Figure 1 (cartoon, rainbow, N blue to C red):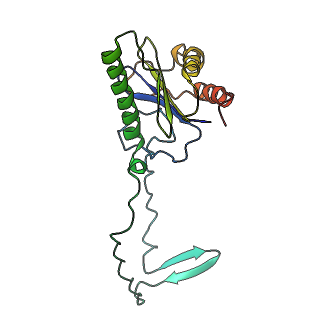
Figure 2 (cartoon, helix red, strand yellow):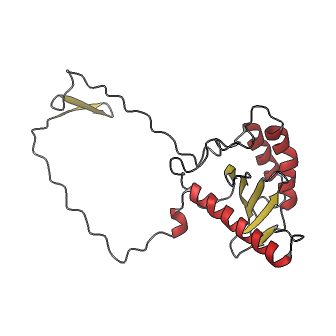
Figure 3 (spheres, one colour):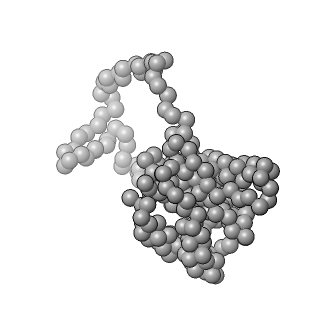
Length: 216
């Protein structure tokens, strides 16, 4: 038994926080503009540093010294070059990578929210407003949901054999979330501009999850 990941969504359907533990396949970095900043540094697209051109009139392609392991090699662009071999044609029988491996994090977070929203609406229509959607299980994972009165949705993915973790999500909300996010004047709440990746909240949540008996 183990716990895979945690997502937090605000009332605008935006993923404002993400954290994982035992994922066997890391999520791909989100595309530029696909997610809010300050959600998770592990999946937020990093801006490329500008390339500094250090060339001068004393450095030309014809007079270049390349250093590798302390050996200086003079490069001469007039020397004959060995032609590169033609590219090998791709085999039509090469297996394609799994479709879920191609998902970026912004697509993954939208997919998780879409599943939660669809199942919650279906349960309300079939069972009435008194019934609540709290979890569902597949052969590979189990999804747990806790929704607050302010519209925040705490979603956790775990091993399918784990019992309900809704109480853990309630503890995360009533403990670290209220302490380090809601009561923190520097943390933007109900904002469409950035997430809530607070260092104290992330550390406290990580400590709480690792202290559970189902965490391995």
